[in-house]
Length: 334
Ligand SMILES: [Zn+2]
Ligand SMILES: [Zn+2]
Image (cartoon, rainbow, N blue to C red; front, side, top):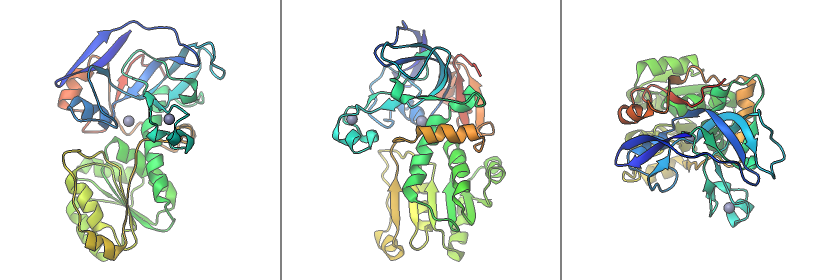
């Protein structure tokens, strides 16, 4: 089978490797689509993603597909099932798994590597999808589940003002989730004009630049700020514009070499709460349900559908990743 590898040193390669039969409770999935995640780009650039990276590794983890075989202990899936996949799985036994926080599992296993023709997750990480949901949209299960976990942490009350930074792929999903929180006002901060228009299209009340938000923050109390970019400047500004008693979620993946700074005294006088969010513990089922409901528009977010081979150029230039979500068409089935 073909698989797209990050081989180190800013190089990507499609290699031919043997596929195999599923073991135990594994489900063998023929990957239809796999999203390119910001963490894949981080890995390709020699920074770590959610965990330490030692190349060569197969990239990708946001995949959907069709079951082609099941392991002998598999109970809930059969050949032909259409599925989405939660790419990383806890051991189920360690203290963090026992606490219901598999994102901190001491032996976090696997990660289904979606830039390949087949993946073999255990069935507890595989989710049935309704016939009405196309496999391309189902590939948004993992990024959407991460956004769901992040927003859960904020425990948003209705009737509030929420500001959100960044209309990249993850911001575009986050905005649509925010729309369902009963916010009185949703302000999107985004430099790119086309993306500001997309924000209005997807339910923002207003879409402004990072200069304009400073003026707005002087006039009104911003109750929640969600940062979906991960740049030092925007993360710092997100904390600055937050109002009294506000909650700030730093969702964008920041550069480990560039810690941010903020005035803790100012934060104290505002009684700020600052949150970060790590992975997607037990949120995949809700992501699938939301995608099936049709309430989340994925089509407007996709900027390109590329082959495994075309990803080499894309990882270097980020031509389409800058504009929205890049999907790898592995089998390309719907
Ligand atoms: Zn991801
Ligand atoms: Zn564990």
